[in-house]
Length: 458
Length: 86
Image 1 (spheres, each protein chain N blue to C red):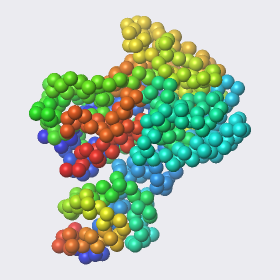
Image 2: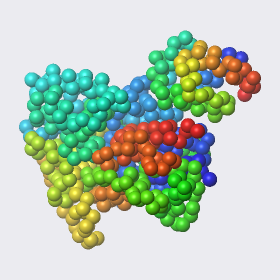
Image 3: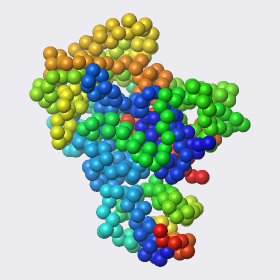
Image 4: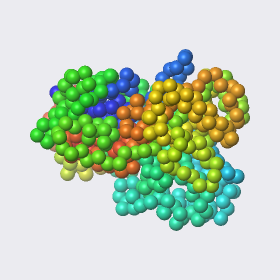
């Protein structure tokens, strides 16, 4: 009998596991896949290391900072800033036709860019920053108002509005075309007021540190242990049945499988309260180069581009939307030592239904075709690296489903979050992208806070 | 345990919660919240660690007593004076 069973060995499940194992619970994390990480993971292909999910960590504040999500996370997990060995970004860009805004981990740069490009908006921009800095994540009743409406009241140039929304939506909006004001404020802080960073070894370092900590504390981790069913008896979850047929008993279950996905696992015959699943998914191309991107004159860490004045954040009608995208070079962080391999990654919105409907042969062909199109679109905004490519890979919404089990390959989960983590059963809770915040820091905090609120206080 | 020993226990817990913090400068009279930016999650951890390490149960209504080092030691003394120092 476990005290808590956790479904999913992604960032949120592992973080929750650490919290519970730390206080001597018998806890078991179950992962369907052969490897940990879920949406944020890593692999080796033809002798080269790749990351998926993570472009950069957000919320990066300097060592010694006492406030903010990163500091909170480190304390809760009993980890030191140095365990993640994070290097800051060199600097990123938002490019729209005829105008670009650079930003780094000091808001002063973005402010001066706004001042140069939109001189009549700089006072409004300052006002936006002070409203966001004062915004109370949990206490405000303005949490769910439309961010588009709120920002347009403050910033009167529509182009600047689009340019500010573009990176925030790409890095964390589960809702099409708009965001909640609360979510906008959190994302604005995490990207523009705090900043971007990456460990030299990438996401694998973070995952390995989490697993090491979890195992040191006596936590159990089972891979290839997909949950077929959450067993419900007398209005309580009593455990799970694995796909292998094995039964595990637990006093409570914490699931990072997603809201709808978790509801479907329950065998209590209750009509499942489904809600709208997220629909926003991505394709990403990855190219390994025979040189460092900086040797081509490319120094930007992340480049957000959009080729018209209006940014569309919605499911594309075609297979991918190449009008906009995110170009990330993991080389362009302030490491002590350069990465061995030059890498360029490009992320674009993709249509899950299209990719899901292809047979194997078509799927392979379409991957090749859209690899070319996405790359061709991106090299309008960064140096053309196509003659320096050693190897490539690509993921699609189909890949995301395979590794996360989330409906529609939805990267940021459902538009409506279950912020309190509660379900129709008193001892079944959810964590992860459908509960709360997104991004790596957000997911880890989701696991921590759900463990604290629901699994530790008895 | 003496007051000094209880202080060491609390200090040990703070060290594990905030490994990057220099606690040699801690002022026992000033609130943890103001000195170390501790929030409600951290206070839960002080309580959880006391339970784990010394089997001391602190009801939620009493968390206010954990504001500073001085108030924490004063609150814990009657509960911990009979516990052997380990």
